[in-house]
Image 1 (tube, rainbow, N blue to C red):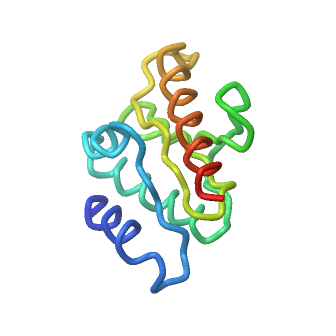
Image 2 (image 1 turned 180 degrees about the horizontal axis):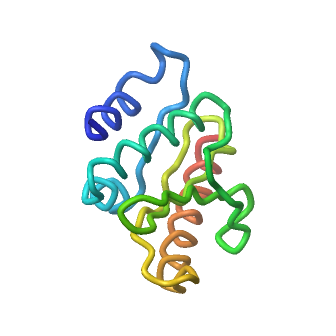
Image 3 (image 1 turned 120 degrees about the horizontal axis):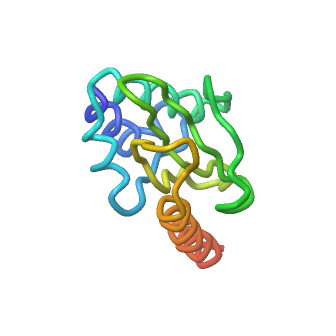
Length: 127
């Protein structure tokens, strides 16, 4: 289901007037590796963001960058999807992972930061 949802986000956003979701790095593959209920929840939460609404459970991630948020999914373990939606062209999913400790690892934060910097450069070049 999420695979179909992800494709529709990328291929058909204009039809519904929604911002497309762009997956950076291996975030799409990681999200696809989640269990089916978690994938469905990821799709639902990202659709809320596309519609300009807040996800069910989220928090800002200023350590990654301004405007970056983390969706928290509590099912079949703890899962996180880090994204930024402040840009005009798209919602960028920077990182998706299963959380194994209470504190987000430096590696996961570093991955999201690096991808955020790439997105910033892309957006600057678009203008």
